Structures are given as structure tokens and as C-alpha cells.
Length: 313
Image (cartoon, rainbow, N blue to C red; front, side, top):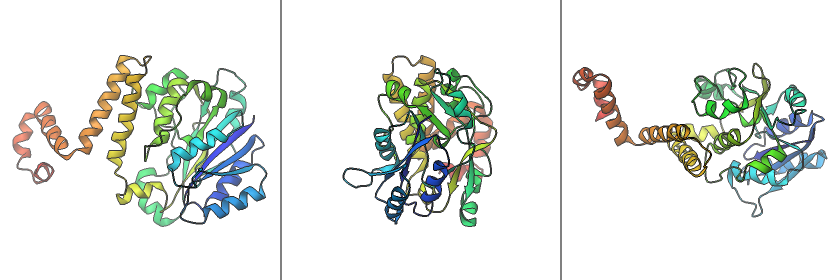
């Protein structure tokens, strides 16, 4: 196996060395491609040092040396990759020693186009843990049981009951399948969820197989200055970003002739639900409609309930 590991780098001077060295522990990793995205800290200097120290580390920036986001940075990494397989690693995350154990066996079968595993979590500080424990806990981000490739897309959409999730850090893809079956890589106009949208389309076009699901193969590093803090601080509205995500998925499904009607209807419902959640006016009338449909009697009592009145007025 010759694996290209793609890492977008932004504001990660404290963590990028750990990430790179966690990837270089594997003989199968042919190259680590760093795409520095005009970091406000000293990440570029650290990346230069790593590229000088390790032959397998390559450093790139965007042609204009500007900041273009994680999606565009991963796309540039994909353009530069020369390995037979692609893996991703965020600059503040790291691989565990079992990262490619399942892949080494599964990719011996030509029908296997991708393998996904489980992601753990590490808090770099007590402050980060206090702030984000309710979001991540100590749980694995994983698919709950082994599914056939044909079920993965529906499972991610929430159409197969309790399916679970896998992360891009725990995914490995056969590059020839990616180049052949995906005409568009990550959507660069999405501020958040570029990877989620990419994984949806990827699981539709490629046959993805489960690897190690009951223990972590990579670790999500959580700290005060990574991307999720922008959501928490209000710089990025999570509800709006989800509307944009499902808008993108809806547009894709409507323009992909092979998508079935039941999938299109499900995607439309998901898109509509997030539109309502992001629109205060629609949210209030949606709540009234819910009461009217499910429990007309509670409307009367609800109007005199202080919490209901705060929501409504």
C-alpha cells in the first residue's frame, strides 16, 4: 500500500507535529501532504521544519498564499497526491497504531473502494473539556455495526434507523475509484460540513466497507481554538450551516438521475426541517402546527404556560 495522507493546516502550530509524526509511524504512508492555509499563528514555520526534517512530508500552499478553508485545502492535497490510497488527517488530530490494520487486509480485495473506522476524542485542556464534553463526551464516533456497502449511504442519511457516523479522519479511499467515480471533490463554498457533504456523495458512488468499529483508529483533538469554537462563539451559526449542507445535498440529488424518489423525498424533508429550525417565524408556526396536529387540547393550556409563551411571543 502507498497511502497519501492529506492534512489541511490552519491555526495548528501546537498540534501539527504530533499529527504528522502519528502518520509517519506507518511504513504504508507514502507521503504526508500538508496544505498550509494562511494560518494566523506560526504553523507555516512548523510545517517548513517538518518538510525539511522528513522526506515523506510535502508542504504546499494555495497559489495566492491565501486562506481558502479546509475544503479547498483538501482538494489541493488531492490534486498533489501520488499514492494509491488516500487518507485524511486534520492538523489537530492524530492516528493510533491500529489505524491501517483493517485496511491492509480489506484492500487486498479489488471490490473494496473505501474503508471506514471509529474515531475517539482527546481534550487538550480542562477548559476545552468543560466547553465541549456535552458535545463529544468520551464516546466513539462510529457506525454501530457492520453494514454492507449498499446500506452505508442510506444509513448516513438516517434512513436505516440507528446507524451511527464515521469521520473523514478514519476513512481510507482507493484513489483510482475516487478519480473515476467522483467528478467533484469537496464543495469549497460550505463554511462547515464540507467533509460531511463529501462523505454523503462518496458513500453513494463508492463501495465503502467497515474496518475497526469497536475501538478508535484515530483521535479527534478538541481545544479552545479549533473550528468548533467558532460555532460555539456564534461566528458560524450551526443551524444555518446545516441548511446549507442539506441544500447542497438536495441540489445534488435532484441532478443525479440514479437517485431514487424515496431518497429524494427524504432529503427534501431533512432540508425543510432545517429551514424551519433556522427561521424563527417558521419555527413558531411549526410549533403551533405540531400542537394542532398532535394535541389540540394542549394549545389552550400551552398559551398560558410561560415557557410556551416565551417561545411563541
